[in-house]
Length: 395
Ligand code: PLP
Image 1 (spheres, rainbow, N blue to C red):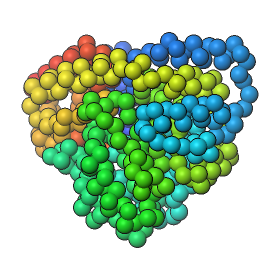
Image 2 (cartoon, rainbow, N blue to C red):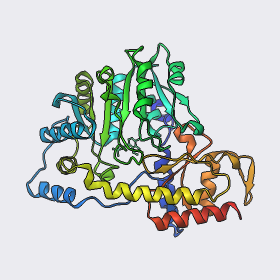
Image 3 (cartoon, rainbow, N blue to C red):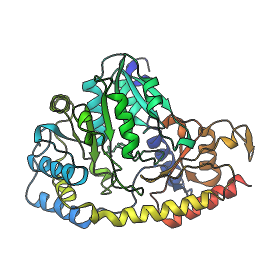
Image 4 (tube, rainbow, N blue to C red):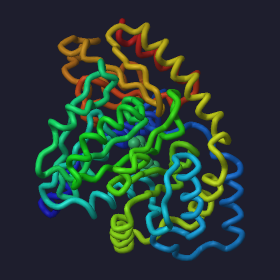
């Protein structure tokens, strides 16, 4: 298709969504697939959030919304940032978008010029690289190792910085590794960044509440980083509101203003009913969703235990989010049930075809030795999936 733009031709399809589509296809064809590929909580939406949405419809909310979000939603976000993160923002620093994915896409569009480098501690969330590329940026992976819990060190960060470095994007808790940066570790990275005042930090905190390690730390908490850090968050993961598509940022005012300008030409303000529901979600303290976090913690224990009984899976202990990211390179060069395994993609496809379990290849996350398994699934599904994987591998 020569008419397609180079822009889209050079773009990778979201690997997580592609795997989910493939699993759905097989399911529809009658196969009993267990889907552990998507980062989607299997809980329903809390009642108080549903009620707020129903009320909004009954109260006739229907019009275009302000591009940067309803004023009272911004207030709820400001209260949330203060309450949960100790961060102070004014309304002019907040922009509400159609999912944190759009928040990130806006940021790349307004901050990157052709050839600007974007540092991505790897493994990283799939979309960071392509969101950067489509905006003209050049992703630069900073490799980590499972032995350092998939975290970068200050020295590794410094070594990756060049005169072209414009952004660093990371998530803590991390999708896909589940790693959580401590205050001390983040401060060490900040100590490097203070020497490079032109680099902007995008701190993706969407898994903030799904943290089994203890304290969540925001880069913007550090006074010397506040003016150059954008804090990204949303309600998809913590409130199980993935399909409602609400994300938001707290940012330096000039960045927030630029994001609003960009969004005003591309999508306008986010959905009105979802914004009303988000107010209810954020006005409630995180203790209201603790039951989900507790369940994820139990499932983490379950899946780590079961994985440790399968040969060739090397895992870190994820401290947050709801994924495990095992290194399965043990299987490279081996033949399993007649299939040659030479990559994480081969391995993930093998699991889909021979164990009927959907996972995602680590290649898409910048680590070609691993696969990502989501444990945002029922304990029954997790147990059955691990049993099938073990059987397929020891066949
Ligand atoms: N950031 C990370 C690290 C994610 O894992 C996801 C969703 O998978 C997002 C952002 C996007 O979330 P949203 O549903 O708000 O667009």
